[in-house]
Length: 333
Image (spheres, rainbow, N blue to C red):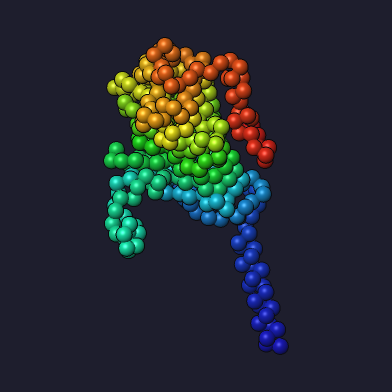
C-alpha cells in the first residue's frame, strides 16, 4: 500500500512539473519589461521558456528600455518573433570586441590560454534558429572602436528583419552561413568597415545604409555555386559629414555577389564604386548595379570588372527568384 501511495505521489508530482514546464507552450505573447511590469525582466529569460521546434508563431513583446544582454536564439527554436514596443527606444546592446582577451583553447598543445576572442564571438545577438522575425528593435554593439564588433550574427534560414536598427562600427552584421535567406525591410544599418559581411543570401528593401567612416560597406563571401549574395533594392546610402570616400563593397571571398539597384548613392561613393581586395578577384567577383540615382551613381568611372545589368537581367531579380528553394518559402512584402 505504501508503495502504491508513493507511486501515486510521484505521478502527481510529475504531472505538476509537466504542467509548469508547459505554461508557455502556446501561441500567446510573452511580455518582457525592464521595469518589472512584464512576465520577465530580460529577453534571455523569455527565450529560455520557449519550446523547441514550435509549430506555431510565438511573440516575445519587449517594452521600451535598454537591455544589456548577449543573446543566442539556438537552432532548436523556430517561429519566434522578437517585437519591440518602439524601434529607437527598445535597445538590446552589448560591448564585446575582437581584441578582448579571454581563456580559449591553445593553438599548440590544446591547453587553455589567454588570447583575443576574435570577430565571431563578439555578437550581441546570434540567431541560429530558422523562421525567426525581428520587428521594431535596435540591436547594438556599443564597444569602443578597438576592433571588429558584431551586433547581429545570423546562422539560421528564413529570417525577417522589419523596421529595425543595427548599430556598430566594424562588422556590424555578419550573415554567417551560405545558402541561408535573410530579408531586411525598412531597416537602418550603420557601420565603418565591411559592416555587412558574410556568405548568406540577403535582400535589403528600402533600408538606410549609413557609412560612419571612409571604408567599405559590404564584404560578401558568396560561394561560387550560390547564385545570389547581397541585393540592395530601393535603399538609401548616407554618410557622416566627415566621410569623403566609400566603396560599395569588396569581396571577402573571390566570388562575392553584391547588387545595388534603384538605390540612392551619395557623392561620397568612389567613382570606381568597388574594390577588388585581391587582384585575382577581378576575374571572379560578381559586382553589379542597375538604375541607381544620386551623385555617387555615375557609371562612367566604375571598375571595369564590375557590371551594369541590362533591363532584361534586372527584371529577373525579384525576391521570389532570389529566395527560390524547394521549400516554397515566400516573403510577405
